[in-house]
Each structure stands twice: as structure tokens, then as C-alpha cells.
Amino acid sequence: MTSPPPLRWGLIGAARIAASALIPAFRSTGSPIVALGCSDPVRGAAFAAKHEIPHVSGYAGLLARDDIDAVYIALPNHAHLPLTLAALAAGKHVLCEKPLALSADEARQMKAAASTAKRTVMEAFMHRFHPQLARAQALVHGEAWGPLKWMRSHFTYTLHDPADVRWSRRMGGGALYDLGCYPLSVMRWLAGVEPVVTGVAAGLTPPDAEGGRVDHAAHAMLRFDTVHGDVTGHFDCAFSLPPHAQFEALLRDGILRLETPFGWKDVEAVLRIGDHVERFAPCDPYALMVRHFETAAQGHEALRITLDDSIAQAVAMDALLAGAHGAANV
Ligand SMILES: NC(=O)c1ccc[n+]([C@@H]2O[C@H](COP(=O)([O-])OP(=O)(O)OC[C@H]3O[C@@H](n4cnc5c(N)ncnc54)[C@H](OP(=O)(O)O)[C@@H]3O)[C@@H](O)[C@H]2O)c1
Image (cartoon, rainbow, N blue to C red; front, side, top):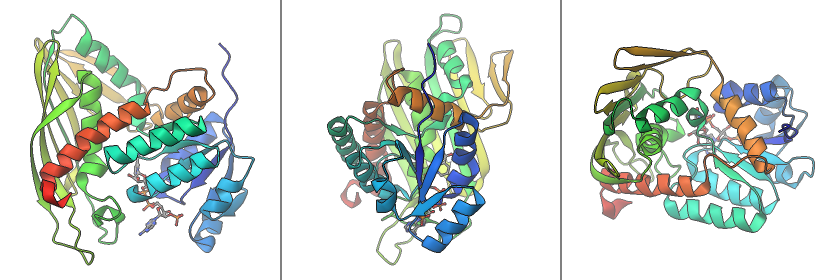
């Protein structure tokens, strides 16, 4: 099968993640970045000049362009829903940062709008495109090591900037949305069924000026009812600990370990199972994600992270947040 041509892209938000990961990914796939939409004309012009993006405007101006096929949304989490709906109404495909939505209800609104617009929306979970995860899934579901029994994971770093939007409840901040979404996604992917949340312990920030509190740390317990019996999942995520990421899946006859579980780019990935070691050459999962999205949006491949997948992720996240914040506050 020949590959379809690249899409023509607009970026929404002069974001750090766009500069560090997605612009290099679009360059490596040969996908033209036609325009930037930015809320601040001065900052937007500087960002566009630095990254050689030919046109800059506000978000509405970007969406009105007829020379853009798809947008990449890298805004604070609370802005994902309105910009996704606006982009779909303008006839654009949407690759939107994680977490796609702040609730399952928001994700369902996106699915309905994507269906009406006949356009593709995908949550930008780049780790799912790293070849180590496909290999991990094959090992977990293969015969050699026995069925999956248990999963555990950590994802932490220290968020120093008190002005970061991740500290704002209104803007969809908190460690579960920002970090916990990764171990949750990998556990769902490996288990192959959706979890029941059996417990959450969280540390919350004091109320901010708007009265909002975010989970700066959370410990989550999940149960996956698989055809081979119950599988337990535990993960920790926090903004207040040194940078650390780890994932382990305990199978009947051995432990599978991923040293860089969440898709770091340009580093060798190492997968261990029992005494065996498998090494994956450095790659760019963001570029693999972009190429897949472009192929799927043009109907040449089934979308690998569907909106039903994102809705199921959001259902689990709703339950985790209800546990972390107390159901009455969510
Ligand atoms: N997949 C990954 O590896 C990865 C890594 C990091 C982050 N992310 C996700 O990417 C998204 C952006 O994260 P980031 O760290 O790159 O964000 P960021 O650079 O801090 O901000 C991104 C954009 O959001 C807008 N923004 C920032 N602060 C705002 C505020 N207080 N009120 C309203 N708008 C504001 C700005 O848009 P304008 O430029 O238009 O003004 C800014 O350029 C988040 O959803 C995050 O979860 C993903």
C-alpha cells in the first residue's frame, strides 16, 4: 500500500510540547506546518519566526483557513473540548493533547461532533506508538510467560513553577490528569479490559483563589476482570517527587519491566522479562503517532486510539478523580 500524502497542519497554542516534540515530529514526517494560532500576537509571532511557521493568527483565524487539513491542539486541558469542537465545526481533523477531555461526558461530546463533521479526532498518546508497547502486549497475551496477574507503575516529577496551569483545578490541573493518565492508559492497553477503581489516596493542594484544589499526588488501585481472572493495577503519580517513571507487569512465570515506559523519544528503550532483555533502538514515538494519524484520517488505516478508547479512559479517570477529591467535589 502506498502512503497517503502528509496533511497540512495548523498548531493551536505556542506550547512547550509543540516546540520540543510535535514540531520536530511534523518536520520528520514531512508534514507542512501552515499556520500557528496563538492567543498572544507578539508571542505568537516570535514562536512562528523561531520555528519557521509562515502564518500566525488567533485561534478563530487559524480555523477559518482553507489550506489546513488538521490541527494539533496543545492548550491547557480545560481548553481541549471547546477547541476540538470549534476545529471539527471548521472541518479540520484534530490531534489533541492528553488528557483529551476532563470527563467522559466531554469525550462523548467530541465523539458526537466528530461523527457529525466526518473528521478524525485522536488523543495524542504518543507512548502507544512506541514499538516496545506492542511487544509488551504480545508478551502479556502470549503463552510463554503465563497470564497477567498484577501491574504496578510510578510516574513522578517535581513541578517547580507555581504559575503552571497544572496547579489550577479550573484548567484541568492535577497529577492524575497530567501523569496518571499514562500508567492508566498502559494498564488498560495491556489488560485489554476496562478497570474498576478499587481505591484512591490523594494529597490535595490548599484551595486556590478560585477555591479549586488539585491532586499533587495520588496512589490508585484498579481491578481488571480479565478472562484469566482478576488483575490488580497499582500506580503512583506526583508533582512533588524526583523524576521517576517505571512500569512492571507481573505474569505467572516472570516479571516484565519497561525502563522508559511512557514513550521517551530518541533514547534506547529496554524491556526485560524474566532473564531476557530486549533493546529497542532510539525512535520518535511522536513522529510515529503523526504518521499514523495522517494515514488513519485519510482512511488508509484503522485509528489506533479511537474516541471510544478515550471515552473509556475518561470513565476510569472520572472514577479516580471522584476518589481523589471526594465525589461531592467533582
Ligand atoms: N504528550 C506529551 O508528551 C506532553 C508533554 C507535555 C504536555 N502535554 C500536554 O500538552 C498540553 C500543553 O502542555 P504544555 O506544557 O506544552 O503547555 P504550555 O506550554 O504551558 O502552554 C500551552 C499553551 O496553552 C496556553 N496557555 C498557557 N497558560 C495559559 C493560561 N494560564 N490560560 C490560558 N491559556 C494558557 C498558551 O496558548 P497560546 O500560545 O495560544 O497563548 C500556551 O502556549 C497539555 O494538555 C499537556 O497535558 C503533553
